[in-house]
Length: 146
Image 1: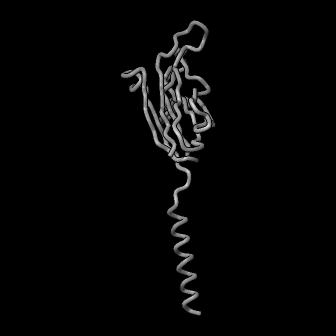
Image 2: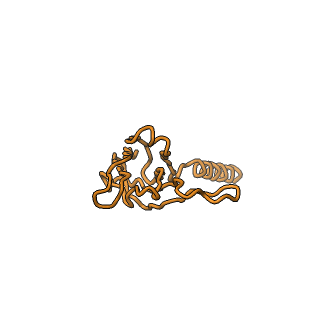
Image 3: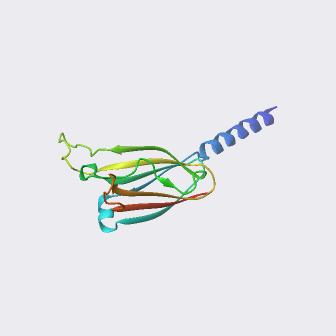
C-alpha cells in the first residue's frame, strides 16, 4: 500500500512539474523607432513564433505631420497570421510634464500566429489623402510560424 501511495505522489509531482514547465502561447514584440526609420526608410525584419503565439509590432508614428500608417496591415497569407488589433499610442508625459505638441507616438498592431508556415506583414507610412506622398517609410516583416 505504501509503494502505491509513493508512486501516486511521485506521478502527481512529475505531472505538476511538466505542466508548470510547459510553454503556453508566448508574446513576441518587434519595434522600430523613429531614429531607425530616419536612418533607413525601408525596414525589413524577420521573426519566428509558434502557432498560437501573439506578435506585437510597434512603429514610430507622428500623425501631426500628416503622415500615418494604415489601420490594417497587408498580410500575404491570413491563414497563417491574422491581425487582431491596431491602436495609436500618444507620447507619454513624464515627471508631470505634458507631451510636446507634435512629438511622435507609436502605432501598435497585434497579430496572432494561427498555424505553421510563412507570411509577410507590410505597411507604408504615407500621407493618406489622395495625391499625398506614399511610402515615405515602409515596414516589411516576414513571420515564420513554427
